[in-house]
Image 1 (spheres, protein in one colour):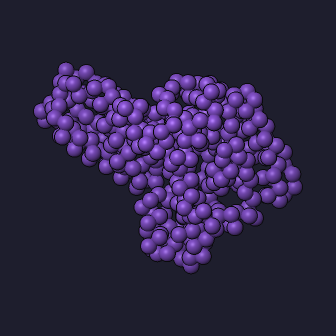
Image 2 (tube, rainbow, N blue to C red):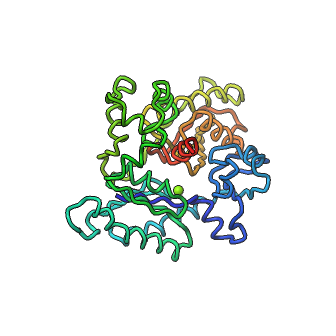
Image 3 (cartoon, rainbow, N blue to C red):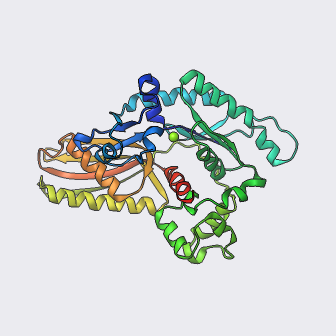
Length: 360
Ligand SMILES: [Mg+2]
């Protein structure tokens, strides 16, 4: 299993297309003057502590020399199509997770050598190198690739050596590799679960490995699953269906309203509801959308995508408020107001960055 993840994708596309931006902190998102939200940041900008879903004004304060650019989503999507054309040409089976991230199953395209599973992983290295080289020379962008025997480890491997990384985790090494990492690095462990574990003194994956029980007492049915993850075991298959998952919440008002405090309160409640659903299912989303309907049943939707998946109610609320304000959607009273998230998938790479940061 390979995990391919483009490095700071949106910002890297901007830097490639405008070479004078190379080496500079590039922040893709809304403008700080217009109460915008950060959608992606280059590695130079990340060094200032900037991350997606942060208010642009905060980003401008942290990094006064930052170059703010409006997102060009059509450009990023078109770039993604080109990249995945190169991926498809290798013959691997692909589960695309987002515009810039995918799991690739290479079992049938890697020549079988011997019976040793770790040697078979090694045999996938040339394929990964060729793919990285093709993306670099034909698209002018860098990708990180992780190789391992399952999704969990492949994703950790691609995150670990970013940017422009290539890392293989063998079955033999995986337990030792996992030991020092924070529990949050594991798939499905968000802030809430990490808190529950920390209160029982379980901070690193090593703590989970050494824990005598199957964690059911602490985490219910997720406990045994997490215990297996901590040992590097994961049997999730490639998901090839491209079903679009959306979670949304809508409110129809008894009487049409343009009252800001009322609308804000409704929005806050809806954002909370969506965040709770995401967190319960251990998911995160990349796109937030708002929907408004006026008295004459005209319906408008607006959406905004961030590069790092989010599941935080305050972040969903902030982006929804900003979308309503940006396009002045509340100039007339509303009959209906709704918030939704899409681009929903497993809790994202930002958590690994956080957890690695915290143990260094
Ligand atoms: Mg990426």
